[in-house]
Image 1 (cartoon, rainbow, N blue to C red):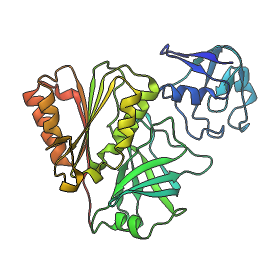
Image 2 (cartoon, rainbow, N blue to C red; image 1 turned 180 degrees about the horizontal axis):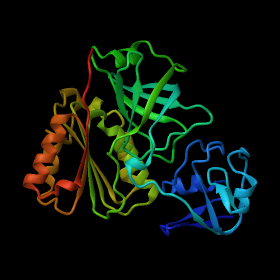
Image 3 (cartoon, one colour; image 1 turned 30 degrees about the vertical axis):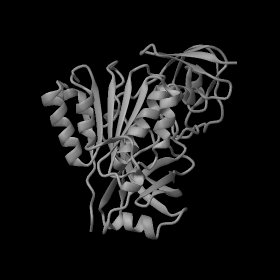
Length: 338
């Protein structure tokens, strides 16, 4: 049996299915309640049940005390509803509300998506989960004190593993190691989440998303979050790459286009090879947007990729197509070689 939960003070409502905790259902429907471990150990998700009955589930007694239960408190990461509920809980709506943490992790999976792109999955310790907003990034902490930043490619509700898309940088100390020596089960450390590149959900404007190369990673997380949330906003993804092989996950947005009537996918190649036999759009990806839209004054744009692409998009959209400066959100990738 499913139950309806109302969050106060926002008034947001969601449905919890038979096999779900309150937190899991909230995340599935796009509501970012505060959490940490997701196993009843840390207390970050603690809130109050204002109306209704819950099964408190398995938790550590020093995290949820008997007197707190008597006051109506519950750990939403392990609690399950036994009736419709009204709960009091904090919703995360801005990057600064998600605390950055330094965590160890294990390399769960390494998979080459292209000659120079590696998918990396990270697994956290059993008592830890990383809360983040779709589009944010983490910093790997290297032994010499240097950092390497990578955007999170999975949506917040699917946080069993952290997914990253790493492009091989010639001479790059970290990516050379990833592509030539790193093995699954290796241990790393990172800090995160960081960044202000995330979807502004208090808007109903249609969204244009522009990815250059592995700039697709945070865009992927954003779109999967929006699809899970059930948004009815119009979404258009332009993914720019040099050649067809560089669109390393093109089948995924093509599949989304079949599944979601409000989503369109437009791949753009700047230098397609003869063997690509490319029938689609060519040129610079930001120019494809300029060619398709005469007026962007009612849109939001999220752009991620190399700085020249991001800068050209910002200038072209705001100066010639009427996009408000405050409606352009971007994350510029810079690559470091040692």
